[in-house]
Structures are given as structure tokens and as C-alpha cells.
Length: 198
Image 1 (cartoon, rainbow, N blue to C red):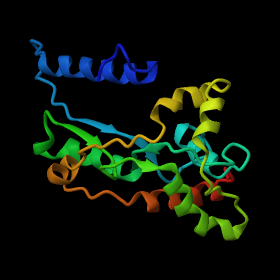
Image 2: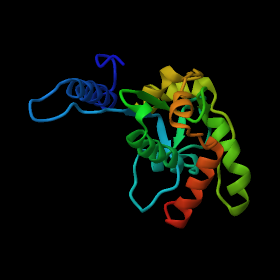
Image 3: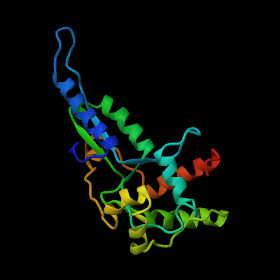
Image 4: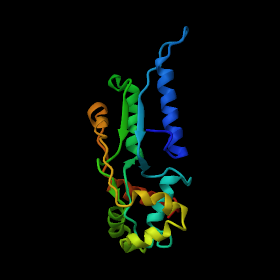
């Protein structure tokens, strides 16, 4: 939540939300006060609607690529299904209890290791010829690569670190239950195959 230490992308999100709350608290002569609810999803995954590529698509393509991911690093991510995020937006706009609330959205309280992701996908898609690695990256190798690869360098401080979030407010206030992350990744992969993105 500190813009000074955040990446430019995350800094933009922090500052935009702060600006939105300032606007919501201001009143204007001819306009009523703005009602605001904020939803903050983690890494949004799930079925795609078209052929556009973004961070989520590239992330799943990496899990399916033996060239890009021959060994799986000990990195962990929070995931949430795009369909749950869309449903939460609709509910937040129509439910009075959501007014002036912030909602963190994550399908799990603990971050999910990439190894768990590939281990969940390999039995489903491996029999169809997809080469999904389930072999771990040695720490020493990842450390050495951090000197030569910018992406690895940026990820290195998160090696082996779990993070924990409380995203249960969505269930309590919006009455929304998260889809399991395994279902999200599997159904996203199926949609990428249908869209010829895998």
C-alpha cells in the first residue's frame, strides 16, 4: 500500500484508488455524493473470451511451455477467477451493504506455489501431449539466473515466500463463493486451447 516502494503498475493502482475515495467523499452543489465500492482482485485468471493476450494468458502459456519453464521455481501466487470478479462487481453495484466497502479478492487465503499449479494441470493435459514441468528449480540455479535475467531478478526476493490474505469479506458481505483455483486454471487452459492460444 506504499506507493514509494511499489512497482509503477501497482503504484498506479494505489494512487487511483486513493483518488477515487477522495472524490467519493467530496460533495458538489448540483450533484449527490458518489457511492463507492472497491474490489481489489489478485492475479485474475479464468476462461478467455477472445484472442487478446494479457498478463494472465501469458502466465498460463508459461506453465505450458517447456522452453520457458523447463523447471518450476518456488514462487507462489494468489489467484481469483475472472467470473467471480465480474459477479462481485455486479453484486457490489446493487447491494446496499457494499457501499463504502473495500473488497480484497483471492480464491485462497494462502498463496499457491507454481509447483502445485503445474502438478494440477499435468495429469489433465499431459495425456494430450502438453509438456508441463513438475520438476523443481534448484535454488542455486535460480540465484545464478537472477544476475542475467531481469524477470528472474525481480522474482528472486519472493522465492519460497508464502503470503496470506483475508479475502472472506466477499463471501460475508456479497454472499459470493470463490471457485477453486484448480477449476479456474483447468477451464482457462481449455479456453486457450479452443482459442488456439495454447
